[in-house]
Image (cartoon, rainbow, N blue to C red; front, side, top):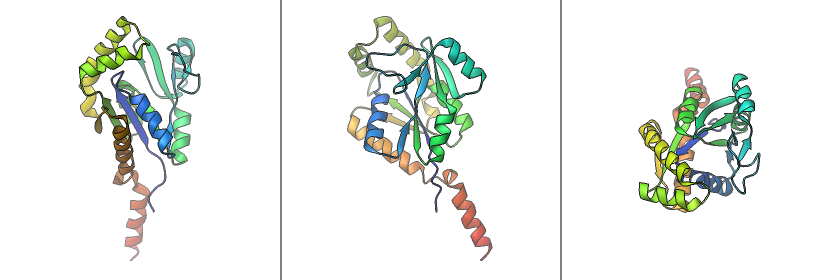
Length: 207
């Protein structure tokens, strides 16, 4: 029988591509997913709740947790810290949940070093014009912040080929369905079924 342990799914993308909305839709439609809650030092946006969208904290506390090795990954992004708590992820993987991590490219590559079997998905808008439209349409950031996010995108685009899949989010429903199919098909990879493979090898040796 195949292993039941969950897999880590890292979802990255330019700010404004809708990756957060995709992941919330995925967890709402399928009960096998667990959305990891990251910690950040940025201020909450309107409607965000501590412990739901993020754990909000100070720079000083975040740096203390870094020293204690409490994060799977952490990175600076647009002047703020972001990090993924290690205990939360490991506990849910052992429970058989596929854990979704919404993190930027620097953190994604850190995760791949610790968990080589992690599945990396990059989400993009259909075009840069559409990306700019979405950023402006959010109404949560000033023009300077939007400009910084677009500058950051110029760096992030260099790393897309390090990911396993690229999804173009031009329709939320179809993109959600495709992401689910990609993740579930990843469970059949031999690297994620080593226990089963070892069992059948041993059984064959006894024949």
